[in-house]
Image 1 (cartoon, helix red, strand yellow):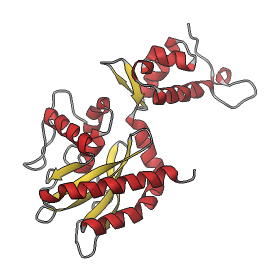
Image 2: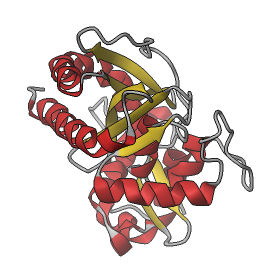
Image 3: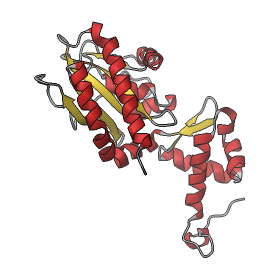
Length: 269
């Protein structure tokens, strides 16, 4: 049986390292590398050399902090959205700096407004935007958005772990999604079908679902593990950004997001 350790007894002799923190870090790395049955609590315990009770306690704490996600249907763990949230806060300034040139080029190509959004404090927030030429648009920088009613938010949902959807949507079990315009998706079932289409084509679309006059497309900036760390969007008024432009703009957004991801992952530490 495990015994609780005091802060002093947890430290390795002659070291300032804290054992419980090192165990948690080891489990996070193990979860990141695990797939399928190797991501169960029992398998993870074997991977890091801990007994099952200790492993379960640490994983429960990490889940509470949203650093890992537990899929109750499969009994397996994956990295949680809390890590993406932390990355968004820690890397926001650097990501905006590296993305600025890409956004300017995207806005010029699309002849619309290009924007970048990250997750901060569990909320999707626009942190940078670029406007092309004489196009006049209301600024979205710094604004929070509804994740189910924008192309930006739907991309985030589509590429996040299924177990994180309800937390991101802030939806009570059995509840409906809030409506902002007549075209807002309010059914979770309908939304989940659209998220599958987004994953298939690589970008999301919005047809005035948050504000009737704002239409757009978005693509995810993914890290090396395929998790979304930011979202690139192109948006404009419905009379100009029409549905027949979605595919071309989606292709541009995907390319811009891939370029930002490449700049981010290749930058020196």
